[in-house]
Length: 405
Image (cartoon, rainbow, N blue to C red; front, side, top):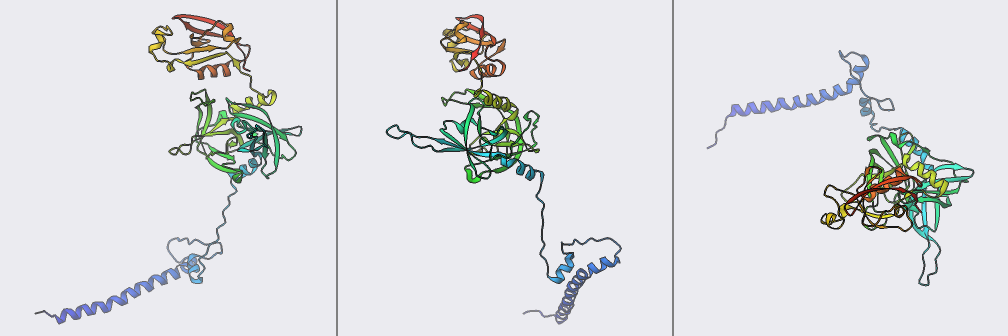
C-alpha cells in the first residue's frame, strides 16, 4: 500500500509557485541591465569604466540590438609592401615560348610548333634592344622563340648565348614595347628566414604573372646534376633554396627580395610526392658575370684539360693496387680513362690509366671537383700543376690549359 503525506505535497506545490516568478524575474532583470547599460555608461554614473565597441555607423552593440542593425562593413587596406613590389616587378617578368620544328616521314621540316613554355626576366634595355635572362633548359632545342609580355604582346626573340652548366641563357628582342626592366640585387647578402617572392608562369601562360611568397630557406646549397642523362653526376649547381612555390613553367622566372630586386633566377624543383616547399634559384651574384659574358661573347669561355676521368670510388678497391698500381696510402683521386688528341693533357704527358690526386696542391676526388676547379679558379692559357700516379710512382707535370670549344 502506498504512503501519502499531504503535508509534504503541499510543501512541494508551494516551492513550485515561488520558482517560476524567480526565474522570470532574473531573466527580465538581465535584459533590463543590458538595455540600460549604454545609457548608464554615457551618464558616467558607474563607479568603473566600460568601453562598448562601435561599428562604422556609430551604433553601439546595444543600440544595434534595438534597431536590428547587426551588419558590419569591413574595409581592409591590402596595399602592403609586397603588393607594391609585385606591381612594380611583374611587368618585367615574361613568358618564353620554345618553338621547335619536327620532321615528317620524308625528313621534311614542319612549321615550328610550341614545344614548351617557361619564364624570363627583362633585366636590361639598351639602344632599342631588350635583354631577357632565362634558363638554358627553357630554350634548349628551339627553332624559334617568342617572348610574351605582361600585356600578352608576343615578340620574336633570339638567343644571344646559353650555358648548360649554370642553366642560364640570354635572349634579345625589340625593346619597342618594353617599358619596365628589373633591378638586379645582391644574393651574397641573403639570409635564411628573410622574405622571398617568386613570379613566373606556372604550368602555362594561363597563369602568367603568378606570385608565390615564402622565405629564403637556405643559401649556398649544392645540387648534383646529370647534364647528359647518363646517370652520372656531372656538376654541382650552387643555388638558393626557398619555400616559395616553384612549379613547371616557373623556370627562368624571378625570385625577388622585399625591395623588389632580382636575387635569383628560378631554375629547379624537387618533384617528389613526399617533398613540398623546396624550390631552387640561381643566385644573381653568380649569374650576373655569366649573363655579361653570354651577352658579350655568346658563350662562356672555360679552361679545358682534355681528359675523360672518373672517381676512384667508381672503381672496385681491389683494382686500385692490382690494376692501377696505387700505393695503399692513396685513398682517393681521378683515374684517366682516355686523353683527347692534341689536348693540353696529352701535351703535358698525361696518359690513360694515370690517377690524378691533386691540382695545384689541392686534393681532387671526382669529376665534379675537377670541373669546378677548372671553371672557377682557372682560365684558358693558365698553367696548372697536376700531381698523379703511374704504375705506383708519384709524379707531377705542368699543364697549359686551353679554351673549351
